[in-house]
Length: 393
Length: 171
Ligand SMILES: [Fe+2]
Image 1: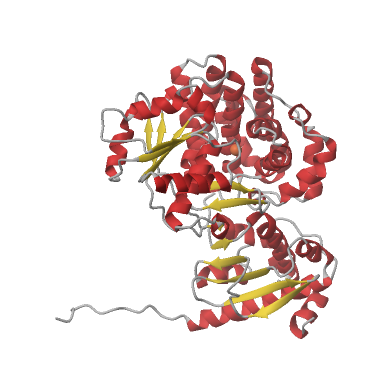
Image 2: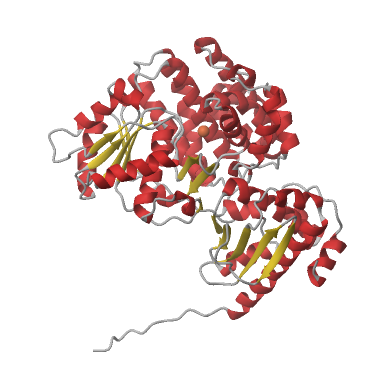
């Protein structure tokens, strides 16, 4: 079925594969930029990834104006403002973000401040209200899961005002995404599995949300195919470069899908668990996915049936009768979680990530206020979320 | 030398503008009325800080309407775009506004189709506002239309008659 109307954008140029990092100077040259600020976190500096990106710019006119590594796991407005100060002080002219979701979200916040000429992000939160970004912006993801390198979404905390600021706009999409296996090779198996499951949730939710369209469908489908084939390999052997590159691509494809189709109830509840208890995002995704799918089953069973092909492969798809395929998809997802739980201890229940029953009502309240709820195919109120939490506990 | 080309001004669409204006008046007054008589709308509105202002309209300078939360009431401020609004929903065109305001598509569909922008806090104002509008729609639209555009029939505690009465005669 084709939607009566939809919009789709992915304006990000993608560099994927061997020595992709070495092409960053050429991309910056295209924007007449020569002094990027490099945003990253302390861990990535420690294991040498940040330096590797800087080194890849060697032998060119590029100068790293500053390497800012003081970015915490939760992007916050103080950090964004501090980076903007350093950027101006050091006369930088572009941004390179090297990291996972929080570094990339922080970098998006920095770009918003620089473009809008403001130091108060509060005035700019919302959907589709940002001006076209002016700062050249290159992203090098170091996990394969968030897809942030191709999403027009950023979430930044404002602890002083107690606001979780959301920015949704195609105008914060980066210019260039660089997928280089050197960046994800050192990810330990447990984190590889949990970020990979996050990518899987992005693709499945994108394929079934109200905002889905033929282009986001194609991206989601391709992402799930790659995840089925390569996530087990990447988890078992981190040095498997083909698997790492495939997973980086899968994460990106799922990112393009959900940036255009949005995510649904699994993310709404997962964000709430993360917000209330700081439960790790990927873990929450892996735990909640089958329960979210069960909740939505009545409205999108046909879509789930279609997904059995990329999820389980052609043999299983052909062997399963049409009326059983949707349930079989949910079962397949359960088996995947169980498998990674055996291999590397990925949690399968909420109680394993520190969620307690007394937190349920706070989580449910936060979940229904998450933007992802709008486009979920089935409406959900606090009681419905409590039902999901109970089952996933 | 004068150019051989001259400007073409697309039509002003005065009729559509007036329709949107009238429909926005109904939404504003209907919202005010629903917050007065329906407990579920009240519960959502109660979460907002006192003085919170919400504006809905057509970008950039089409018709608008605004409401303000005062105490446990919602006050309709008229067909204006309050300059100090905490949240602003703006349809991208008159056409988009008509699609939603005449019940051809629901709020969630409109969001999915990028028919409007939202300035402000999605989490604490936007989402409760969306749920309020679901309820307001269920009162103001004929049931056959409302059922078609709502994912699920919302919990309500009043009657269409009460909401219509207070929409027309005020609260
Ligand atoms: Fe996610």
